[in-house]
Image (cartoon, rainbow, N blue to C red):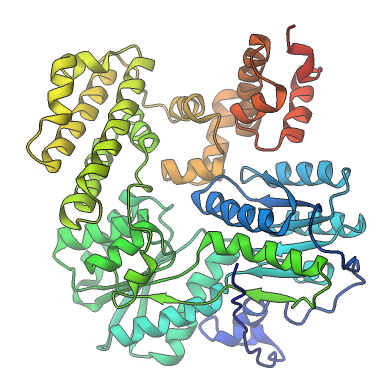
Length: 553
């Protein structure tokens, strides 16, 4: 990886940051410059013999697409440097992450790269590694002040710096007076603080003609965002001149759709992320700018710093990813790999069907239609393969529910004609949309789609137990808070969501083990445990025996 670091000039700390208003950037000094003034405790010394053959354990938060890309970048860099690398996913559960770290520390790794799920629990993990004298590098997520004193270094995005840069672009675009609203990140996280108050405090200083009208967290949900934005337009009218979003994918789709429906596409929009969807919005003009935070580079940077430490090089206490604001003028340079359908998943459509959400199903296909027909970003040949996969997902779902997707389509002949003999791509998408709606209607008739929230949650577990499932990921899927989902689930089942999920996974694991066709490590991965050591611990906790006891000769 090319060594491209972003250095930051650190101003003197105000005597009492909290004496200022929240709209003053000095109020947020300790959050924006976290770790820069940390006085290090005694730390392990580099052996100076290089990274080759060293064991490197990397702790990620969950199975979000960002972390999967992060792993890809980290893995490529680790292989290049000769590390023996192991990845651990916490499924957005701090308890899981802590248990996994404790297990890893017993194996004495040479170094740990750590991104905490939660600040307090993460601090406890870092302290455990420090006491075990294992060198640790913090990555991606901002840490608490004490943790910076116990780590070799920290690497990741400069969220605050990016927000200030984005705010300045936004102010340049919105030259007239008026108001702006914000779709925020999840409250209570360091990302929320940076992506909310970084923008607000910067605009307060450089653009007093712009007035903050409202902020809302819309659960990363397209339809909820659409509803909120339409309400903003109704409430503020012509006073609303701009919207800032903490996410450039699903929430941005909701923003764009609401503005189009209300005839207010004059409203200036900026966002965070640089996902493929966001870059597409830049290209078609519905977004003015997005920040650049590439997950692959994020993962590779932390590994590169680890390698440099083993080589005996001087390590900076904090290293940021380079900053960029992507606009229509430079977006093509960020699209060298092209845009495809990576953000449109058949699993998402299956979820919409099981929830009976006809409006979201319609929006799903309209978004694809825009991507293919209007933006002309991908070719029709590529669309053909995508359409086949999508149809396969629909037929599989129908079969699982005891319905014949082939019969719903009118038989195999109509299935073939419906997908492959439509005159246009747009008509093919309409046909797929109609098939999805037909499945919803049939499942409703047979009462297999339940209005019970808990039933919907358990169905989701049945479909996705092999993936990274948690209350946090479900809160994004269902548009409800994780705390509320957990409360309702326990009230109706008598079990915590985490226990229910683990019991279901262990039940599936026993079935696979007794089949005799898979090794225990393979079973762990098949039922959703990225960390095999955590799988062994959990299996014994629920069964009283080891996985090997279930393997038949």
